[in-house]
Amino acid sequence: MSPSAAAEVVVHPDADSLAAAVAARLLVRLVDAQVARGRASAVLTGGTVGTQVLREVAASPAARAVDWTRVSLWWGDERFVPADDPDRNAGQAKEAVLDALADLGMPASGVHAMPASDGADGDDPDAAARRYAAELAEAAREEGVTGPLPVFDVLVLGAGPDGHVASLFPGHPSLEAGDVDGVEVIPVRDAPKPPPTRLSLTLPAITSAEEVWLVVAGEEKAPAVAEALAGPGPLPASRAHGASRTLWLLDRTAASRL
Image (cartoon, rainbow, N blue to C red; front, side, top):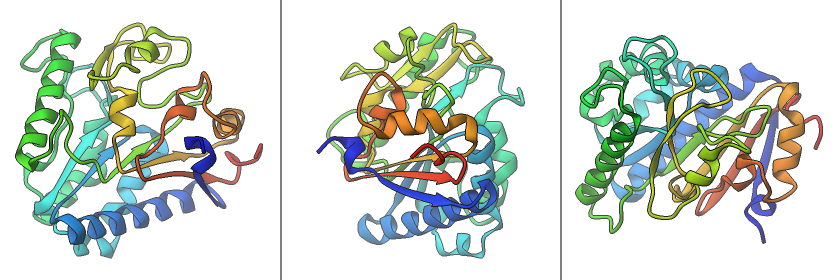
């Protein structure tokens, strides 16, 4: 059975109900992971719906059910811009949820933002990608995991109208570079969507996650959703799957071609 054939599809009436439902699922998944292994981790995404999910997490009374001192948050990709640039996923997440989680006890050490272009490596995306890969490897060692990646209990992705996920774009060198075993983080240059320079997890890193959730809203994305769910192909979204579970969480318009 192909990963796409094994995927589960859940359709919600609209983008608002989708974001609220994904937030509820995420909180339950983190609690379940903490029960099973003592801690939990999630890989976050940006974008309109991804950021709304984080706002819903912050607003949910169920957020208090999670022990945030035992949670690690990572990112699937990031815009390689200065730290205070409003385009950064990490900055949007800070406003949406991270400040609220700090009030619930989450330490700064649990938040693993990707490097910015004005960080320790300066405007060098190759060095920044290596730095984030090293941070992942150090977390894996601390968890006693053999290999370069810690456990990702859930990895959340959006998908673009072109079927891209993270910053892996169809027909772009990023996709080939991001589909190499032994490489966990890559720099992306000349991305077809601004800003042009980015950092991204690779497909092997994405598919190492226990669960991968693709959260998609909007009629303009319906053709890519249908193509990706038809089976593995040229679209990066068609090749994003979890080790144990793959969920496509859609609003009604994104599911309209299924």
